Structure formats: structure tokens, C-alpha cells
Image 1 (cartoon, rainbow, N blue to C red):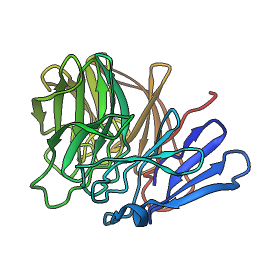
Image 2 (cartoon, one colour; image 1 turned 180 degrees about the vertical axis):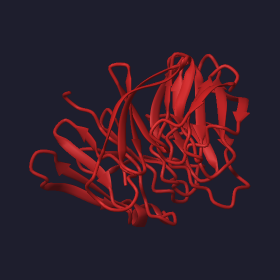
Image 3 (cartoon, rainbow, N blue to C red; image 1 turned 120 degrees about the horizontal axis):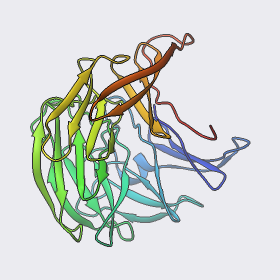
Amino acid sequence: RYTPTINEGRAYLISSHGVVCSLDAETGALLWQRDVAKDFGGTAPAMGFAESLLIDGERLIVTPGGPDASVVALNKANGETIWASKGLSDQSAYCSPILIERGGTRLIVALVTATLAGLDPETGTVVWRTPFDEAEELQNHAVAPVYADGFLYATSGHRKGGVMYELSADGKQITHRWADETLNNHHGGLIFRGGHLYGSTMNGRWVCLSASDGAVKWEDRGVGKGSITVADGLAYCYSEKGTLGLARMSPDGFQAISEFDVELGEGVHWAHPSIADG
């Protein structure tokens, strides 16, 4: 469902039923586990819980989606509660939280059922919040927001497209900048670099948008709808049909380098590639 988080020799993950586990990354031995859905009153979304957990210092950030506990911080060493997001009670929505910094203010950004929120990592206090897909019948937000240079972009394949926001100089306020109907990324993830956004769309195209105004720079078929990760300036695009492609992406276009088919497995290929040690 997602990529486990590795930190200081431990692997952290959440089951589809809402049980958070800490494992020895070498042996797989269970170190501790906690049923955060039960403990915080969270109800699993339709397809179960799915997110890559976030590490911030000694804190393990999880979104159980309970009353006054949309987002919680656990002690990564033992699973004990550090804080819960009082005043934020949206259900979890398959979305991994991210950590950003703006003007000296550090924020955990979480996209939950109907809200995009920025929280203080130390206390869980909601610094700012803005509605996201309040009126949508299917609130499925499986794409982590992306951030660069004061600009934050969020999207969903179950809405018309995405929204770009701008944070104030101190990071404590958020403003709507523009919306687009092109980059409706389903769950493949986005890349935000050099003032441009890159990702695939529900109709199977790869797209580049200008971050300043949302203008479409190009669309390309590429390997088809799928996920993206980047290393050494190159994009690794993995399609739902199992084609893994290597490409150069810039505002000037999509330049395919090579590709091959992953033949094992059945059904759609929805797992995201991870890159480590070459």
C-alpha cells in the first residue's frame, strides 16, 4: 500500500486496520505495536489505512483520523503518545504527511478528508487550515502535497485537478493562488522542482505545469499513468501496466531514455519504486 519508513535501523509502518508497528529493519523482529485506530477513535477509510509514516526527531507522525486526533505524534522508541491534533478531527485519507519549513517556522502538512492543515511539530497545534474537496462525494487523497520556496500544491485524482497555495513569509498563514484541472494525479505522486510540477494524470498523460500560474508546459504519453520518483536529475516513471521508464523531464519536454516491463505479479502495478544505494 505504501513505502515503509526506515530510520536508525528501524522500519515503521501502519496496517490497513490502523495498527502501527516498529520493526528491526535487519531481522524484521517486532519491537512494538499500537492500534492507533482503536486508541484514538479513528475509522479506516473505505480501502483501509495507507500512508508512509513521517519521522521528525523522536516523533513518529501518523494520521489515525480520530476526534481531536486527525494527526498524532508517537514516541518512535516505544509508541507512547506525545500529542494529538486538538481541533482537527477529519478522517484519514490515504495521504502521507510531510514536513516543511518556511521563515523559520517548521510545519507538518497533512491532507485529510476535507482539510489541508499545517501543524506545529512540537505540540500538534493547528497553525492554519483550509478546506479541500469539502463537497466531493469520494474524498480520496492518496497524493502527498509537495512544497518548494513558499508554495504548496495539493491534488487528487478524484477531483477536477489541483490547487496551489502560498504560505506567508513566516509560514503561519496560507493563501489560495490558483487551481488547475489538468494535473489530477491519482496516487502516483508528484515532483516539484525548478518552479515546475511533474506527474501523471487520470487520463494517462504525463504533465508539466508552471508553478507560478498553473500553465501547462507540455503533455506526453510517456509510459502511461503511474508513479514517479527522481534521483540524480532523472525521473523513474512506473506505469500501472508494469512498464518502468527512465526519462529526463524539464519545462522543455519529456525525453525518454529507456524502459522495460516488470513481468512478475498480477493486476495493476500501484507500488511506488524506492531508490537506495544506486
